[in-house]
Image (cartoon, rainbow, N blue to C red):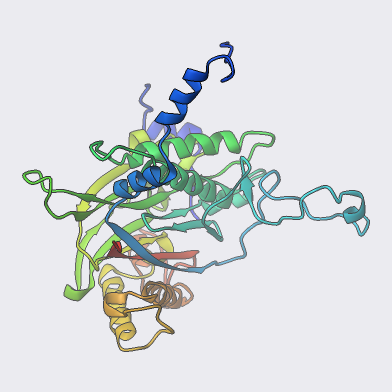
Length: 389
């Protein structure tokens, strides 16, 4: 996303900020205490059963497709081990890791980087963040790092709460804005030491949960989405069998081409500015998490039609090998859906004479512009399916 980042003096004028030792005895000394502790520890099968009972009865089948307008910048240390500086380095530094994967706090960073974008997909959570590309012109600026780290920490917080051990009668209510707030705070900390890395990013994600009828606790569960958005990335929910739009997030802007964003010098925070919607969906509905490289180049009806056509082609045997039933895009069809949507957006983005939503918005702002918007294009497609068992 090549666009404006917020400078402190302007941002505060636009949106005022709201203020807001014990000694352990050995079992030899206290054998009865040791036996009591052992007897109350749940066995692994019990723990696993409780955890399985707390998981949603629905899951995502996912696919993703990416196009970067330029190669992503490498992550700096300490997130990535520095490459060897000379031929002799491997001999003198044999004790150092040669791992080229990216890490934060000793953990592998989740998701994928696409230019300044970041995406993530799992059985219960998908997300697309769009880093503000203007940071690439500033010393210490790294929007791709910010977008990836926030999405990583967001996914970690989300899935930690999903997989948390609970008793069968303990109700679980997701809190996506709080997960995102913690991710934002952890990213600030991670990018502040030992070096300062600046950046901002939008954030959009969808968490798959479920609901039980209020009047019947033993009634059938139905899928329920918790959709969170800050900025102008987008989550779209479609019902392909009816060619119908179920829900889409609303873009948030400070001004044209300057969306709400999390990070350096921005007054926006998840608690104050993120919007969360609960959306009831059905099995075989498709959920899309996209950066603005899609919605700036394709109109809503074009996105819907593209997804519907892709699923139809998949059901007819096109799009590659299936891992199972092809009905509704199952069995690997979401990868095909994501690829087809990315390709369609890329065609417009790289055409200097095409008509596009971004061009239309620019003209409405009194700016002379023609063609698509060349940008990073990130698509995560997810199909809601009932979990086996």
